Amino acid sequence: MPNRTAFFISDGTGITAETFANAILAQFEIDPRRVRLPFVDSEDKAHQAVRQINHAGQVDGKRPLVFTTVVDMQVLKVIKEHCQGMVLDMFGTFIEPLESELAIKSNHRVGRFSDVSKSKAYHDRIEAINFTLAHDDGQTHVDLANSDVILIGVSRSGKTPTSLYLAMQFGLKASNYPLIPEDFERRQLPPALVPFRKKLFGLTIQPERLSEIRNERRPNSRYASLENCRYEVAEAEAMMRRAGIRSLSTTTKSIEEIAAVVLQELHPERMDY
Image (tube, rainbow, N blue to C red; front, side, top):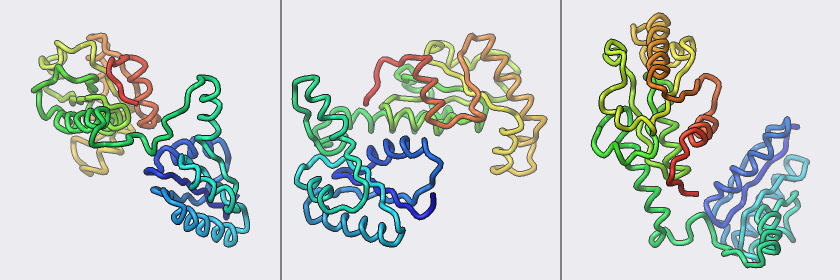
């Protein structure tokens, strides 16, 4: 279905609207042009957004799809009354029925953190991201005990992006630690990790895919050779089995899927939502 535009409108960043909308759109065999319109927090900005949406509809020849998480009722009214697209009010769809069921009014706050200067959850999230960056790729063993999750695996198996996703999305202090040839020669976990076995989760990957990824970084090197990748993956998987470390192949998994499995398996106590 070509020539259709999807708009994500919010009086905050628009990330919630876009994430939720993309999950819905993924159920259909379409690839619309996507436009995020954040910080639509006044009637004037709403009218500007409406003009952009209506213009897109005229150019496309089809009604735009408009996903909104706007909470200001006056701003939302402008969009609903003047927009010529199909408007899906995501907060109205879910929050109003919940207000009736719970018999309480929602906060109707803009965005995830209404005042970042006073939000403990926001500052905890920033702290988790800083912690995760400092503990990327085994850079330091200091404060490793404060990790909520420690990912292990060979180089380029997906540890860093998964760690950052866990920190940014869930506020978890996620360390990651590479398994290297010296570890394979000893045939046991690196000593720094042994005290934290319950926090460990292993990432593995098919050697062929690992070789492709490494060749993008270091073409025609011993590091990227298929023979070496097969050796490292086999040794890493054997080490995880011996140590009783739960693991997952990242070969065909998205970061979101990997993170979901890690959370399901480890059940970290502290998570922000």
